[in-house]
Length: 277
Image: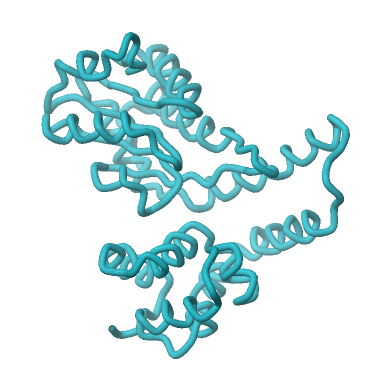
């Protein structure tokens, strides 16, 4: 395989060939797709540790995509960050330095400051990396839908619940699929090709959400997916897919970026229903 010349080209190659990679190489693929900044700045040893693979696996991964070594591949990630915005890059590096230097939070104020800083980073990443074309496609699908079915279980439920509420205030026929009494399939039983499904799920992905996405696909409905990885199993069903990197403090993940995204979509429908670019 010929080595990619841009990061976008490399990401496309990784997604296309993902299913043919070994389990170890798939671990690396998922990590590099979801952690572009870390790949750009961290050492090979750190990346291997974070991806939970031996350093030699990174070399094999780079070789599989036509590079002479992993450091050569890293240059694509660095060049992309430079092309974006230098201010954001500098800020991301500063945040990383602060996180490395700070002691673990102890007081409630410490925890608040930690979450506020992490969420600020996540929101900036969302604004920088969310593509206008994807937003336009999503607003068109929502605006033209006869019915909108919103699915989000476990920690995604609060996001799905709020989005349904916001869509109703935008005068859309929106329905929250909550599976009350185990009636997931019954709640989606009347779905048709003129409807749109919004599926929200993060790793580990809810099996019920995957099942309902498959049902929606068979019915010919349009689908908008909000998830945490470009190789999420939900992405295969999507007409518009948003990969959201939520803030994380220790083992606790925030929802600020996902809520910001759905709020933006709902408000856009209310004030700009034709989704003009």
